[in-house]
Amino acid sequence: MDIDTNDSLRFTYCGLGKRIRKIHGPSDTTKYCYDGMYAVCEFGGHLNLQAKYVYANGMLLARHDVSPADTHYYHHDGLGSIIGMTNENGNVVQSYFYDDFGIDLAFVIKSVVL
Image (tube, rainbow, N blue to C red; front, side, top):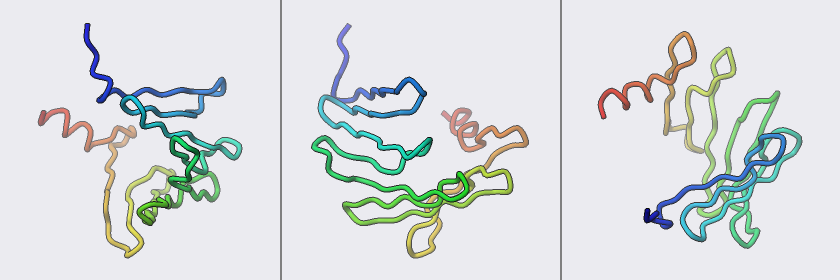
């Protein structure tokens, strides 16, 4: 069986179950750095900083991409689930909808449509 390595996606996890590496294709590698249980930054193949994460009270608040410089802010409901994301101008770039049991409704709709 031939596998197209240009379109492959592989993950590596540490013994605590944290994702420490993502490999896309033959050479695009992202490494994750943790502070306790939270990923606080991503590094590219030659340890160049790609993104930083900001947390408060255990919830992800923002992701800052280094190049091109871009920041996204995460919005949570009362349970702490992410329900939306805005850019640095306050424009909504992503919304998330869940049913009463936490099922991502957008995923369900996409699955039915496909």
